Amino acid sequence: MSVTPQQAEQEIRQWLDQAVIDLQLCPFASKPVHEGKLRIMTTCEHDIVMLLHLLFDEVMLLEETPADELETTLVVLPEALPEFLEFNQFLRLAEQLLIDSGWQGVFQIASFHPHYQFDGTLPDAAENLTNRSPYPVLHLLREESLAKAVAAYPDTQAIPERNIQRMRDLSDEQKLRIFPYLFSK
Image 1 (cartoon, one colour):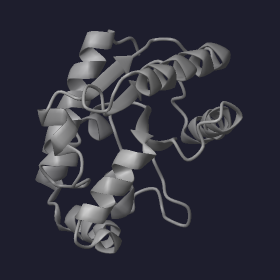
Image 2 (tube, rainbow, N blue to C red):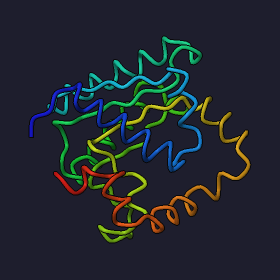
Image 3 (cartoon, helix red, strand yellow):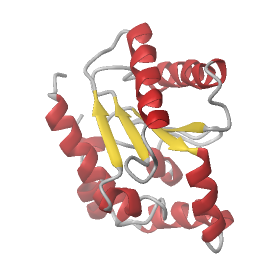
């Protein structure tokens, strides 16, 4: 599969709009998107060492840029880590990078993948849709901003169950419209 960074970003933006924001899978996502404080960095790099360097650079950019200018970053990997197990192994390296660089408690990584599967679920379980994106994605988050958003939200504990129910309530037609990449790749 060969996709340009522009095509991948367009698909990611569509996923953000139709799944994450319209379905309110993350009640905190719309603000940085609508305020233009979300960076989408797409790379066709697939070498693990180079991806870690790129991730380091993206976290540095977040650290050096005030949150009122840049809140969060999505690192999109359309050419890398197509297998979910391989992606999870890389995610462990990425999290270790944060620890080794002194960013534990400052930044965190949320992950999304076309084949995302929560531990203990079947591959076609509805809850897996909540983290299925068109391409592997590492979402770099500021811990301080996340803590403020969570404190201001009335019931964060209910978000996962609410999201699972939303996924279960989707018709096959809705799933095809919202997650077309799951049926075409």
